[in-house]
Image (cartoon, rainbow, N blue to C red; front, side, top):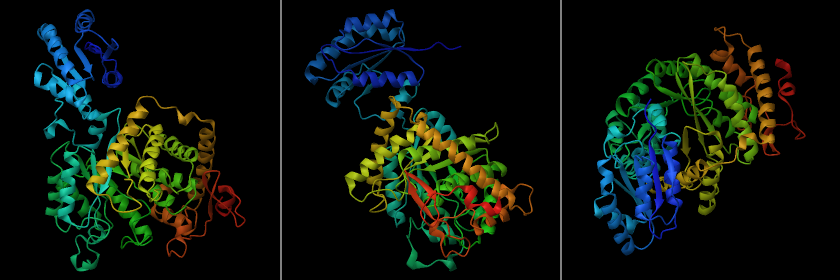
Amino acid sequence: MSKTKTVVACALGECVHVAGVMNFLRLAEQAGWRTVFLGPSVSPEQAIQAAESENADMLAVSYRLTPETGDRLLAQFAESADHLRSKGVTLAFGGTPPVAERATKLGFFDAVFNGEQTYEQTLAFLRGEDIRQEEEGSFPQTVTDRIRWKSPYPILRHHFGLPSMEATVSGIEQIAEARALDVISLGIDQDAQENFFHPERQDPRRTGAGGVPVRSAQDYRDLFDASRRGNYPLLRTYSGTDDFIRLAEMYVETIHNAWAAIPLFWFNRMDGRGPWDLEGSLREHQKVMTWYGERGLAVELNEPHHWGMRDAPDVIYIVSAYLSAYNARAFGVHDYIAQMMFNSPPGTSDVMDLAKMAAILAMCAELENEEFRIWKQTRTGLLSYPLEENAARAHLAASIYLQMALKPHIVHIVGHTEAHHAATARDIIDASRATRRSIENTLAGQPDMLSDPAVIRRRDELIQEAKITLQAIRNIHSGDTQDAFIDAKTLADAVSRGMLDAPHLRNNPHARGEIRTRILHGACEAVDESGSRISESERLAEFL
C-alpha cells in the first residue's frame, strides 16, 4: 500500500490571509493528501521546522501583501528551505499576481499559483502531473476517463455552433484555449442533421439555421482540429434525424464523438425534425444505440426534457426518462448518460425539480449492474432564462447550485444568453466561469437538499405514479417482442393513444395533445377541465 502524502501549508510572515491556503488544502484532501494547516503569520523557520517534523512531502506557503516585502521574505525563505529539496520535498507558492510574479522570477518553487489556475490544473499538480498541461496526453480523451480524472468536480459541457464554419472554427479555438469546457457539443444546422447525405434535399435558404452548416466529413475534421489546443476538449454531436448509422460512423471517424445523443420518441415527423414516422424512428434509434454499444461508446438519450419543454406532467417526464435508460440497457449500451434538464417547464419550483430528478435516479438505479453504468448529467432549462442579462446570470448560478445536489458527473451549461441569442465563444467562457464558481461553492460544503422531507414526499409520490403509467403501457402491449418497454409498436401506441402526452402536441398527427397540465404548488400536474389535479389511475383508467 502506498504511503499517504503529507502537505504542510501556511501564510508566511505578517500575512494573515489564509482563504487561498484553505482552498488549496481542501483540494489536496480531495486528491488524497494528508493536510497540516499551520495558520496565518508563520515565520519561515516555523514553516520549515513543521515540514521536517511532519515528514512532509510538500510545503506550500502563501503571501498576499505588498510585492516588495514579499520579495525579501521569499528570498529569506528560499535560502532557509533549500535543504528540503535534497529530501524530496515539493515547494509551492500561492499569492496575488504581483507577488506570484516575483516568486516565479525567484526560480525556487516547483509551482506558483496566482489565482488564475483552474481547479483542474491545481488537482493535476497535486496528482503529480504537469501544472501547465500543454500536451493532449495530459487530458483524457474519453468521457468516462475524463469524468474519473476530474472527480470530484463534474466535467463541463456547452452547446456551440454559429451560422458559418469560419466563425465556429474560430470560436472552438477560443473556447479550447480558455480551457472553459471539457466537452463542446456541436450545434449542427437542421439540413446537416437531416440531409447530410442528400444534398438534393438541402435548401440553401436554410443554411446555418440552428447551427453550423457542416456539409462534408472534412468540415467535421476541421472542427475537431480546432479543439486540439488548450485543455483539448472532447467533441460530440447529436445522432441526426436520418441515415443514423452512416452519420454515426462519420462522427466517430472525424470528431471522435465523445458520446451519442439519441432520442427515443423525437426527431421525426412528430416534432417536424426528421422524415421518419414515430414507430419507424423508434426502431432506427434502437439500432443506433446497439451500434454505439457494440463499440463501447457512451450514449445519452436526450429524451425527457422534450416532454418537459412541451408542458407534459412531471410523471410523464419521469416515465420517459426510465424508458430511455431501459432501452439503452436492452440495446447494449454500457455507459449511459442520464440527462436531467431542470426548470422544465418554467415555473417548476426547486423542491419539485429536485424531487422529480431524485425519482428518475431512484428508478433508473434499479437498472444498473456491472454491464450498465449510469452517469448523471444535469442542465438548466432552455426555456427558463429571463431576457435581462444580470437576471440571466443569476439564474444560471442558482440553477447550477441546485443541480449540484445530485452530484452530477456532467454539468451541461446552458448559457445565460439563451433567451437573446445563440452563445458566442465569449458568452460560453463567461458562463463557464460563473458555473465553476457555483460548483466550487457547493463542493466547499452544500446542505443536503435531497433530505428535505418535501423532496422525499414528492419523490416517493412520483415513483408510485410512474409505476402506474408503466403498468398501463404493459397492458396495451401487442407488439412483436415479449418486452413492452422496448417494443417500438407498443411505445408508439402509448403516444398515439394519449398515455404519453403533452399539451403542445395538440393537432399532431402522431399524438393526442389532449392532456391538460398546470403548475400546482411548484409541480407540473395533469389536471381535469376544472383545473384540479388528477392521478394517473384516474387519467389512465381505461388502460388499467
